[in-house]
Length: 170
Image (tube, rainbow, N blue to C red):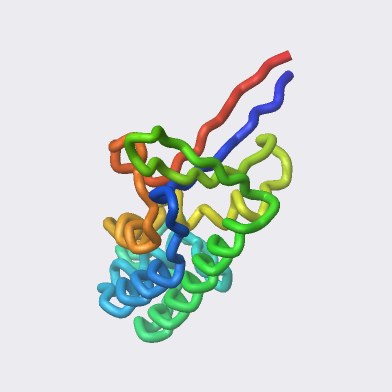
């Protein structure tokens, strides 16, 4: 029997702070210009607390049955709140900040949070879902929001956030 440790990390260029106001503005622009099918993805994935995520569709139609204008308003409000929650975590006790880099380059600031798997997730870990779970948003939305925030990929593989699991057995 063992316990796993899960850590999530975010990165920004050293000497800068994540710009969540810019991320919220980018999210608002995405929602304002979204096609109904893109709004359906957000609702179907359960981001809006008032809407149950759907696991199926009826005749190709989403099962939430919200008018487009109402869906757009709900999603804009939801993404704004989720990004505000993620912003608050960056200065919380649940998040550690580390400088990584050499004297040749400015390096990056790494924000890290996590805890034992199976335990109650920390607020920060859960709040970063909006930044990490890009498969639950329409194509390109995560990249647009994360780029606006200023998140960078220190490894150069396109990922601006990481979730790592350390497994232990006893």
